[in-house]
Image (cartoon, rainbow over all chains, first blue to last red; front, top):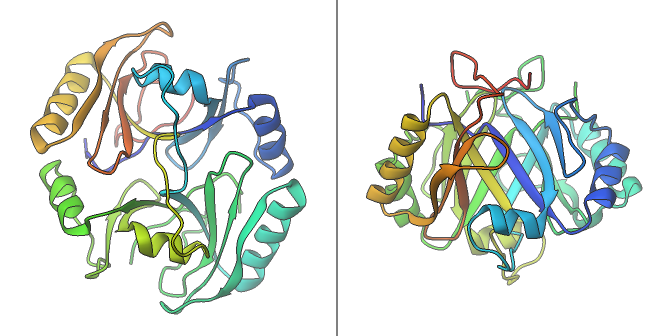
Length: 141
Length: 141
C-alpha cells in the first residue's frame, strides 16, 4: 500500500454550523457518515472533514493550541478558464474572501485564490499541461 | 464534474531542500513534473506539492504574509493498528515531531499525530468503520 496518499483532509473551523452552511452553498453535499460534531464529504479516493478547531487541537494532543492557516492550499483544477472564473464567482457568492482574482500566471496556467471564513485557502486553477481525468481527478502527466 | 474534489494539496515550506529530503525519507517519490522550485507527488486522483512558503504567499496574492499551520490535518488511514504504529515510527525516524503517540480514541479507532519541520500536521489512523480500498484510497461507507 503506497505511502503517497492522503485519505482525509480535516479543516479546523471556529463555527462548525457556519462552515457547514458555507460549503453547502458551494455545492458540497455531506455524506451520511457526518455527525453533529463533524461533517464529512466524499472526494476522489479521499474525504474532506470540517471539525471544530478547538477539538482539532485537542485531538492533535495539544489542547488550547492556537491553530493557524494559510500555509496549506487546496486546489481545484478545472479544464477551462471559464470554469475557473465560474468557480471563483460561486465561492464569492457563497461568502468567500477573494485573495487573488483568477489571472494568467507565469507557469502558463490560470489561477485565483479565495479563503473561507477560517482562513483556509482554496485555489481554483486551469493548468493546460495537466489535463484532468473525466471524473475531475488528476493524474500527473 | 463534481465540485467535491481537491486535485492538488500544496504545503508551503521554509526550506524546500530540507522538506524534499524529509518526504523522501518517508518514502514519497517525486513525479517527473517536479522542478527546482516545486516538488510534486502523485496520490490517488490528486497530487501533493511542496513549495516555498514565501512564494506561496506571493502566489496567493499576499506577498509577505506570514502563513500559519495547524488547522489543516492530512490523515493517512491504515488497515491495522500495527500499520499505524509503523507509519508513526517511520515518521519520527525521518525527523518528524511527535504530537500524539498513536492511541485508542473515543470514536473507536486508533490515531496519532506528527508534525513536519514546518508544522504541517499529519494524522496516522485506523478506523475500523472505514475499510480502505485495496489501493489504500478511501470510499466512505
